[in-house]
Image 1 (cartoon, rainbow over the protein chains, first blue to last red):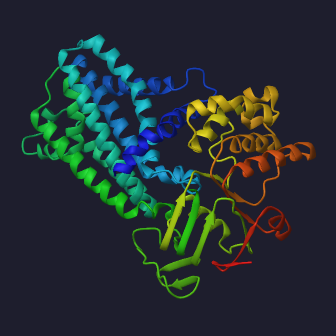
Image 2 (image 1 turned 180 degrees about the vertical axis):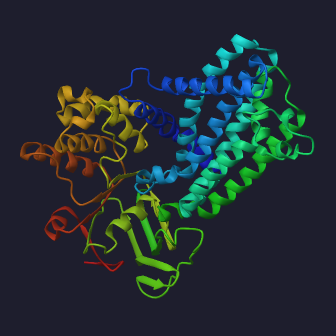
Length: 256
Length: 233
């Protein structure tokens, strides 16, 4: 694992610059480029936000920011998890030609999605200014985001390795994520759950992750438990990643 | 001290099809039973068998053998892509692998950007790239085209760009799959000079080839590979 982390520094340009090139490639020959992602997410978030605030009879100034933040964080997490599964398959030409520690490829993908996430944050900032202002609690976003990135990095390493060997898991993960979306309070609020159903959110790691970053933006101090949960997830994912790397790092090239 | 030392390196790898790649059939690779071991659980290819050698500074190694004899696999083992299933391999020195010249290049980007992308994949730092980029552009003779997207290049132009980039940075060990010949008659001569200079600066060259004449001309050590086994000629 130490080698893999050192590699991220040594091969900095291999994920940082090539990751930029990936994004530029995606929006090549488009005038506003990656800001299309801001527009498409913005349209979707405002559209669904308005509709659901009517259906759920919640005030728009409360529901729209809540939904927007949750949805944008969810998009980031779920896209990264989906992409993680096919990372090595996508970069197989490189993996089969030159020897670079695998974490560099994982980092390149994560960096890709982080760039897109940053484009979406514009929407959050605009909505906050429109509806509720920015409070001092927002500073919790920084440690929260760092923890989320760390967790995603570790989870991505594990998924990338496993999915290269068993290609069906790529599809399984995609289906599961779709399902999890509905069980995670993104477009519905926790207090809408009937009594006796709170376990749906209490034991849902995705809820913990999203809540950790959503509550400070909405001006609340995140619950202490959330930090604990997050730390636990990171420890578990890191152990799994260390195990997967140690055991299968050298097998990945054969599986491609 | 630059060297490549292999001790009893063997390599076998499983071939997964859509069925055996899935969870349903987790297969165990049978290491025994010939080069292609077929059993109910899947196919396992024995690409290298008990290969030992020591390449030192000044060695110009030519690997000859039929298709599928294991030449390219051996190059990839030296490059660190495949780890041997058994045996040990020690490589000291920086490696330039010229197995796929246009690796990482992309038609949507300009020639200039592609030089950067290709160089980064070779592990070259930005400072060094910036210092060498004018020389690369000049050698490739692409002129104004360097600022055009690469998708409009002819295949010859693309190869010239890739070749110029790949041979621009010094490495201790050069791995080559077949001799590189690039472009039309005139450029080809120029490219050959550059390649010779590039190789002469390196400590070790390992080149796979089908042509015995070429290997005789270029190399001071010739190794013959057959069915994954190696013998010195």
